Length: 320
Image (cartoon, rainbow, N blue to C red; front, top):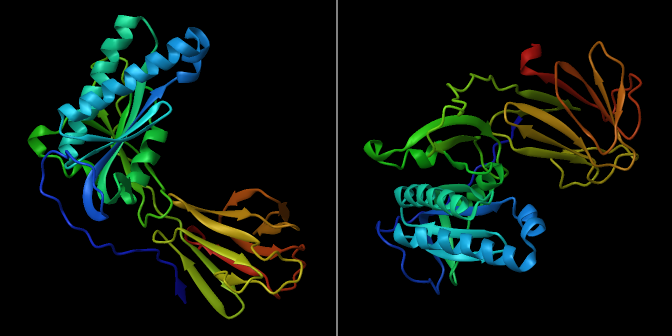
């Protein structure tokens, strides 16, 4: 029985906490906080102000974010378009900077009488600094968080919050967990609340969602997909996790991806994937996807007609 478990081990060297003041010209691996701040609604800003004034306004916002970071012990890594990437030695510095960035932006928007806002995401974790730029897990996760953040929001995750001193933690509220590509476990998203408003919708504890595992059977092989699984591939090529010999199957026919507590079958083939859920009619999946449920069969490139050759059967954990 195979059990797919994607995990990596990285060498981590913790830097001394303090101010990041210089650009690194050699490659170093460390644990740092990465913060992205993105100007929200910049497209509408260009339409309402015109190119020249909008460029100046966005530049002013980004300079303000950089100055806030410098004041909290961080540094600017790069600025691109309407977004800045900032790094800090500690999670506390990043949290302080995120709050300061949002407060300064609110003051600027009020002074200019414009609808200006940042959405901010930051993460403390492993990173590689090379020639002044930063790469790695903390960068990827922070980028995912800023993409999720709404205008005026600050998003981080529970592991970063754990790095903050308990006595200095800002007001927090737990949001949903998300699946991040390349990470073994889901990310518990946390919002840092910086505005006091009666309109704020507070979120209670997260629901206790039970992971729905999937057991696949193909010939004599059994494959178990669980919370440690990110994705597997199915197709004719030998490098796939499940090799399908059916001539109508594509070389990379389909993927099965974990979506938080469920699994999705994603077709990428020429001839399509035929899916049968027990008690329901067979249907064709072509460049589409569906979530697993109950039990059933998957056939590749042709309908399933009771012929079990090169067919994958599946049983979800809630169907036993």
